[in-house]
Length: 465
Image 1 (cartoon, helix red, strand yellow):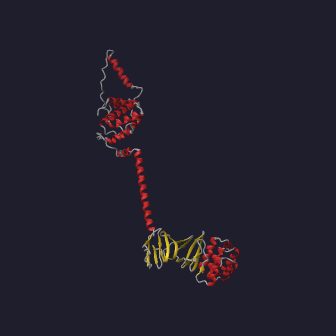
Image 2: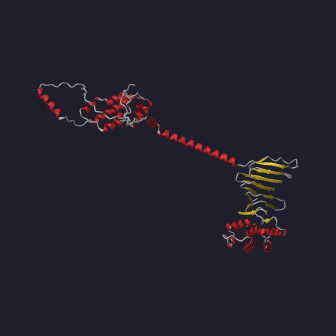
Image 3: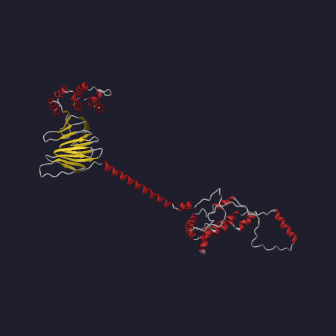
């Protein structure tokens, strides 16, 4: 495309650095579209380099001066020198072999002829007026156009024809392919930043999806609901509601007179309800299944892999770890808890107590428990313990201590935490006759009700009873 006069003026102003920053940006966009302007800019740059390398002062050789002087003296004063020719013939001397120069614009035949076959530059070199300097070679290798980002975009968008140069690449130094590198440089920083942002966002979405899937499948596998309800015996009253086949989380179940229900808690155990009962499910996981007990006759039978079954009754919490127990409420009597196998934990008023098998304990009210009794206790001993639960006096306490046997060790052990210091010493002396204190425990620790010492002595009694 033909270059306009105003574009030529702008080219020289751009080369002389006379344009404002905004005008320079506009002109660089024009350079990308018009190849002629880019070629002219390259020529101006090369011409400026050649002129800059010309010597300031020229001193010819003495032989040349002598020849000129002799010629003038032979011809005389009337000699008129001939007019110089427009273009001196090139000498036939062999040209010096130039080093191979990197030229990323060698595809353009116009630029190649201007740089490599410039008669002005070659004549100066041949006559010895100027020498090829390393500075010039480096300037050619790393020229203004070569490093310009405008030229990079120009090369990417408008590829030119292959060079007519027949020079073969040096085998020792293979030619580097720069097209891929230039294309990678062509991406703007803003575009790279957006790609990174998208990549990080994609990773975040994948991570959230995986985490949600793992949590969902874990919850599904860990959940033991719904619990299967098997009606073994139905109520004979026709106005009663039908019992559900399953019970889910936070669901209430009410049974009626003559009902006998068995609830299967996954692979953890069975809950048996007899007669009029009322319960509500609280939690159902592989590690903890819990219910709220309101009234009735309930029995829990664990399976071999049960971790924890928890029953909430008023302000009392009963925990079973592979232990079978039964709890029953009465209209005019205290609620009775029977431990059938192993041991259970009872938490009330911030205290945690262990009750072994074959023992019975009563829930006197919402916050008080009775002293546990072994089921094989005599009627006299049972009456004394029940009297102690109602009113503690010196005669009752001494009678319980004197009549206690080895099987009544846990009754004395729990009384120890509920009597005055004077009776504590009497109970410790009685228990030491059956179960001496371990070496790591002192009598003072027991009198001070140190929990670690009490637990250690409890385990000693439980393992030898």
